[in-house]
Length: 251
Image 1: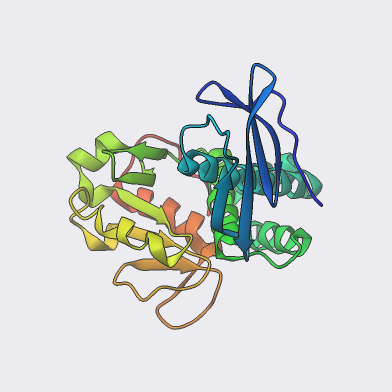
Image 2 (image 1 turned 45 degrees about the vertical axis):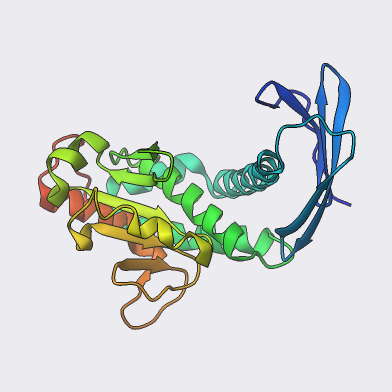
């Protein structure tokens, strides 16, 4: 059984002593306060049962912890692949020619997916796409703001170039939402109030969704946008919008 031990990570002052695909153990001051049995199908939680003596506040918190563990694992894998290829090499190559981003995104995705066993589900692939885009935006110094909470119901995964610009010049700003499963599709509707320009709402998903917005996926087809093109498309969007917050790279 694969498992992860957490000695220092905390969640609302509680500590995660142990996480495995079937169990979460939460401790407080080195005392075990709950053992949670997880039932999953295709890596998605379908049932969660805490021990009868549980002092932990809510099952939803534990579910969040389970998926947080998945995020940590995907990030760790992604950056091991990036180091294998050469982080400095990628950065130098993209500084001289950002057009190479398509090749590098394809390369990192293929290597990462090949190391995931069993073959990753939509949720894991969505996490991989999101983490990979964050990495490339950073090394190319393309301006962005991430995980912006507008209210209790709306979280913007990515805003280009920033929230202030979005409020003032929505026609020169992008909202990019990462949709990891069909239940998250309602998150797209929530951004219409903030971004009245439909062409400036982009969606990232492992599989394509039938939406009126531009949809970047890992699949190819008519009216679909390949995920490996997204960095270059963001670059040209900023260039066409006349953004002055960064220096444009050769392409």
